[in-house]
Each structure stands twice: as C-alpha cells, then as structure tokens.
Image 1 (cartoon, rainbow, N blue to C red):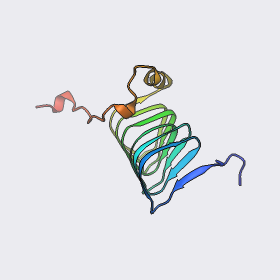
Image 2: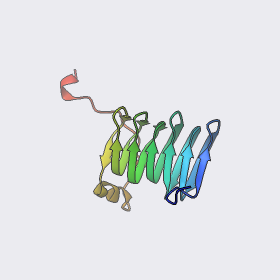
Image 3: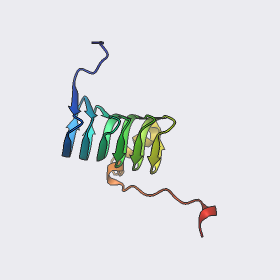
Length: 140
C-alpha cells in the first residue's frame, strides 16, 4: 500500500442505507445511500451510483455520484464527469469535469469560504437551495 493512501477510511457499502448525522475526521466513502447531514474535517467521497440526500460541510469533497443538498467544501470540491449536485455550493476551490451537473448557486474562492465561516454568517447548510434565475430575455 502506498504511503500517501488514506489510513482511515469509513465505507458505507453499496447495499447500505444510512439516515442521520455523521461527523468524521478522516475520509468517508459513500457507495450506497446516505440521508441526513455530513460534517467533518476530512474528505467525503461519493462514488458513482451513490446517493447523498444531505447537507455537507467538510474539508473536501470528490463526487462521482449524486448529492441532493447544499455543499460547503472548505478547501476543494471536485465534480467528476458522472457527478450531479442539486443544491447550493460554496468551496475554496472547485474542479468541474466535462459532463458534471450542478443545479444551484455556486460561490468559489478563499474569501467566500472565509466569509461563510465568519460568526453571524449563514452556512450553506442553513441556506435553502434556490432554483437558477431565469434570464431577463426569457421572462414573459
């Protein structure tokens, strides 16, 4: 095993359905379904075919599956080609592959994360997702 491989990984198997709140410090890999809230100082990995109906507030997120909920990635959000996010996103950095899908508002950058983390500011998990605005020329 490589030295840079994560030492502690919590895996929710493909046949697992979990409902509730999970807090973690290292890495969580979701292969099945998670409903609730995910918070932590580690990395969340959502595998292809996996479903997270959850608000997420973690250090970093790698998505190949689906997240329905708001995402706050303090350092980095990586949306791979098969990923779908339905919710608002705040991230320090974001990588979005061709083919990835994002429904919601998006704010990226160190200053945005800093402002969202300030006392009195709403975190994305307490801010409801809003549908995209319709361009002025399409309004009737």
